[in-house]
Image (cartoon, rainbow, N blue to C red):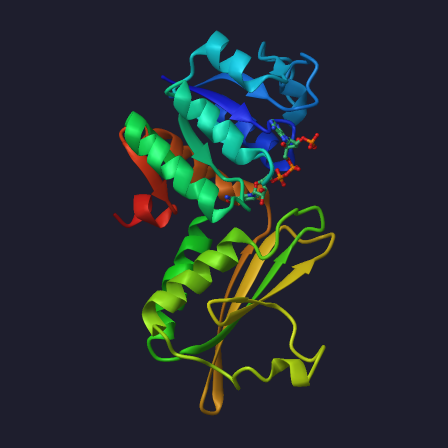
Length: 266
Ligand code: NAP
């Protein structure tokens, strides 16, 4: 049995993870953490009866008390790095879905995990379809270097652009190198016409609306044609097989693996 603590357990993703871990035979849900917790049982968070696991506010206290193998974190950009470092120092393996972590924080976590020889998986998207979308986008970029990304998420998402969009842009950039698309350095002459943020020269447009979960279109343009690769997570169930895979695989890792593709295709 792999002992799991869920951090951000009362959130949209945290509740799904609680349910998935609870329903999985080889995993043992030993603790749950959320900043506004008051010791209530977590079962009702996913519509179940009480399961005997309290929701607590202090991550470090829960790690000391429950001695888990893995901490799954779906919290916020402000909280995630601190939580991951706390887990690593207690030799608990983090599986991280929270997006919006800064590059410096990621580097610090990489070196801490390597020094301590503790496994850690960080994945901006745990949905298999999204991982395939990024792979197909990298393949298409060999033939269509001109590309823009539209990512669409629910209106409570804190970060923009999404971690998935940034990862897609990085995958395309790795293929197309220093190719520069569109007209250069002239955008300010048409204010308001071209929205979105650059990621290495690739524009990412972020849509935030109620009714959405997590969606992305990667649109390539060529001579007289376009190619659109689209992925839709229509429910948060879509992320759970990837999270469970990471929980099992992180047990055998040392240091940080960034991206679910490195577990699926490796
Ligand atoms: P959410 O509903 O806001 O849930 C986050 C939860 O974490 C909230 O209950 C929040 O409490 C709690 N929290 C904040 N700081 C904390 C801390 N220091 N310790 C413990 N709990 C803390 O957000 P969500 O929609 O579940 O998304 C969570 C993260 O996952 C986001 O970064 C999102 O982009 C990411 N995400 C990733 C994937 C993936 O596949 N990798 C998929 C979907 C979402 P309060 O509400 O009181 O602040």
